[in-house]
Length: 347
Ligand code: TLP
Image (cartoon, rainbow, N blue to C red; front, top):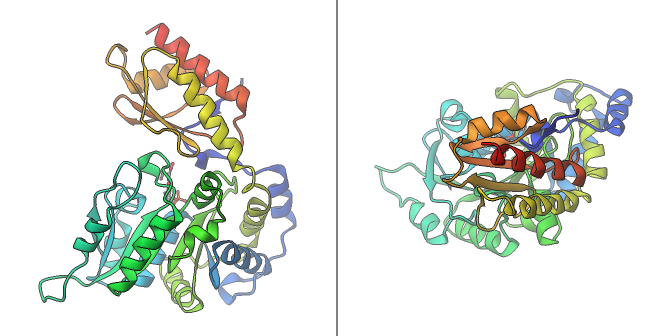
């Protein structure tokens, strides 16, 4: 029996078409800028984001790190959400490796940062303060359940940042999910940003990689920083080839994942003992918890589900995340619902 793995959309395997493209990829030394497949992926990524240039990086974490270190020097400050992936889950890289000071402001439940909070966080010129250089947004916002930031909201944050002399970076790991949910091109969501990093290795199913996009000058600096952090890869076209197939074949189908997320949410809502978060799902993630009446906790529920071939992520003692993706179809969703039924009924 195949396991249905909804712990993350990062668990996705490459498609057969990606494996073929990888095997046949033309390659060169990318540190010399001579890998034609990497160059093609970077150009495609930049075009999709409406930016001048792109840079292939090993991961979303590396893309955000390189972006922050390209915008900020040591002792300078990045303003970001207190539920931002860069703040919570990137091992403190911007501080550890770049000496960049993270200044968190509260993420609202819809994933936004209040403009007032961002405005107040920007420092005045004073010998006591670090210089504020950068604001980061995340779209979709993972820890807010995959919530979507609109183009208008992003424009407002961009305007505020730019008026005060700061840059705007978007962690767009799942920007194509946001674009699908809003029915707008991803480049519209990136318009106000000086840089954006999107991931190929999540719902787009490529095995490795992200593309950081921005102006020619920004990407020239980012290329230096990528080298400093050991991210100058050589015949990386093998990996980029899968990314090209991801952009060509996986973006337009994302609404299927969103529909499956809604199907899962509807099914779970019918199970006594399960409480869905308000608003879920915004995109491809369903966030839910166990009612107090259920006598087992999240870890035990997940263990019993795993015995039935269903895996979800336990994100708090009694809360779960299920991330829908290409490798789970409607029938798979129904097996997940049935699994929860069974485990909770027998608890
Ligand atoms: N997110 C992973 C975990 O790290 C939590 C997941 O399962 O969702 N930005 C955002 C918004 C992300 O969700 C992630 C990965 C990253 C950046 C980092 O990407 P990678 O894993 O490629 O370094």
